[in-house]
Length: 173
Image (cartoon, rainbow, N blue to C red; front, side):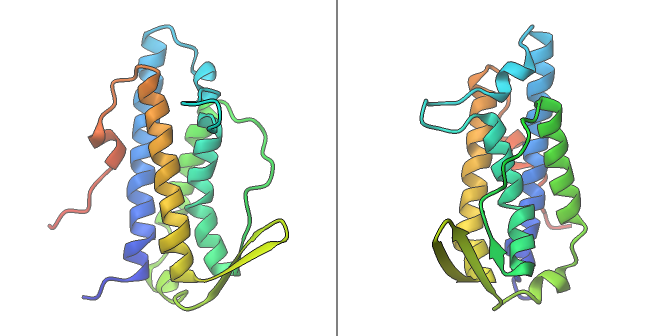
């Protein structure tokens, strides 16, 4: 069996979104047990010039669910201004992205190969193929923001580890 666009993108998004959901859940439990207001964590950032947890999670959803929508529509833009999400809202955003991607059919995703995708940022337009966009832009951004969100949860003291980050692995049955 050949390795497909679905295997390289959606399967990884779904796995990692499961991990993000898991470390957010473990973080919430820790915060509640230790008298830390989860809403204060939403605006935590690792460094002054980095996005807070809120934006990291929005980017995780945008570079997974939004990336697949862009591969279908042919256009990707930064996310529109969104309302400030609380901790529960961030958890719900991750779950909805996971569920939406888990419902995609491999044959539909694989049929996107070779399609044009334009990343528009202001007056700039960067042309990609769907697979080039997903593999060289979207997935690296997705992993970066998922890792940064994990690091923020860890920075706030939650006892999360690599296994929480990785989500459910696809092992041979």
